[in-house]
Amino acid sequence: NSAIILNWRVYMIKLTRYLKGYIKESILAPVFKLLEAVFELLVPLVIASLIDNGILLNNKNHIVFSGFLLLAMCVVGLISSITAQYYSAKVASGLGTSLRNDLFEHIFSLSNYETDVVGKSTLISRLTNDTTQIQNGFNLFFRLVLRSPFIVLGAIILACNISIEIGLVFVSVILVLSLIV
Image 1 (cartoon, rainbow, N blue to C red):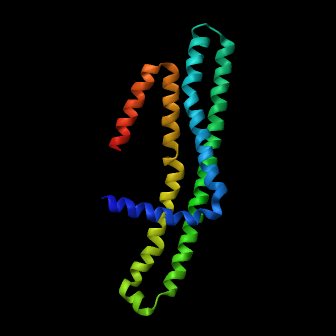
Image 2 (cartoon, helix red, strand yellow; image 1 turned 135 degrees about the vertical axis):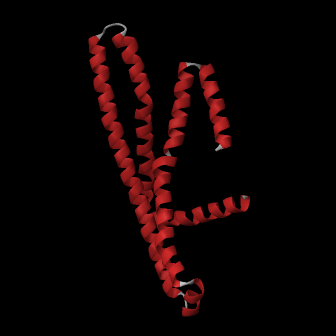
């Protein structure tokens, strides 16, 4: 099992060379995912303020302000999400194209004997399906995997802001879940 994980890491490191032309996008995708997570995490704070300072105190100005603030946060969060998706897709499609081109060149460098041993259908499958799976994996990584740590870290900070005891319980549950996952 550890050999599989080691091989996986080696292959992932080899694939990162295909990201060289997409450094800017590889940085901007997580930045916009972070922005999306921040606006998502701020919603409960605004709603708490809406209830505490608006509804309970019958402050209509605060209620209207909080409503517009929630709407603005929603719009900015949506724009951040769409922008992150765009950069993620751009990185993944560029990586997939470069990988396919390299594989295509490599297949043409093989002798007739080598292509017969491996099989033409296997080579076509590797060129299309496997590279598409790698491309989708990178896209999912940039879109979903990077989002989770931002949400978890932000939730821990907000929980500790409310109560240190609640924050510690939250941290311990996250550690147990991390070990299980």
